Length: 267
Image 1: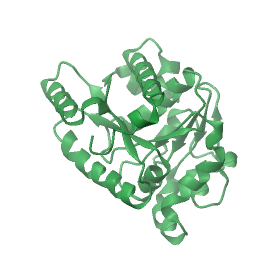
Image 2: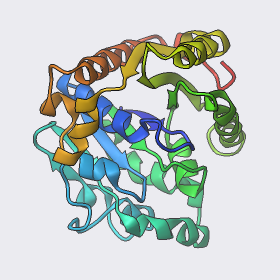
Image 3: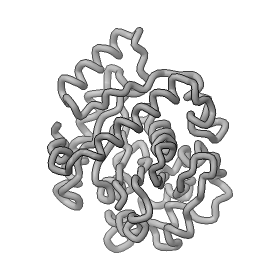
């Protein structure tokens, strides 16, 4: 059965979608069965996989509102050998419309249940806000990956997200845990980046992934070609880093459940 992981940070521009797309592609390259769920109305993960978000017949919005089945909405990404549940601007209406439906926080969880046995990993790219879409992702997920840019407000922004995770644990998903924090857009020449990185490790310990995702031009270029970095420039530093992150995540997922469960939201 799939391990379901929400990739989230309410702060934009921290490499959230970049991490979702490239981690998914790198896990698929490790022969994992992968489903990437785009739950961001911007549809950047969809476009980053080479799918025209304006041309899809059904999206995550239709699935959440029960207007399409998940199986009918999935797109096969041939290059990356993985499945995608696409998104586009229609998803902006979900916040209001979900309030009108029964069991709103569990709509994504219910939609994923019939196909969970078909995948090894399901990654959910969340919107850069703490809304009902994010609550759906956190309710459906077993764990959370938080991309964090090593900058001045990084720790301050984390507190609001940790509060939300704790609220979801109390209300709809008591087993939700933090899988790890990923340091993104990292420049080792920047003293502040190194200081914030050290603070994250001091505060969160082993919850912080060892792999650092660097600032990398090729990594920034790849989405405009609709390709994950390993299919755009596999020799780039960005590709090497995401391959390493995928291996590190796979190793974590192989740990015994008791060991993995030690990493709670206050880790």
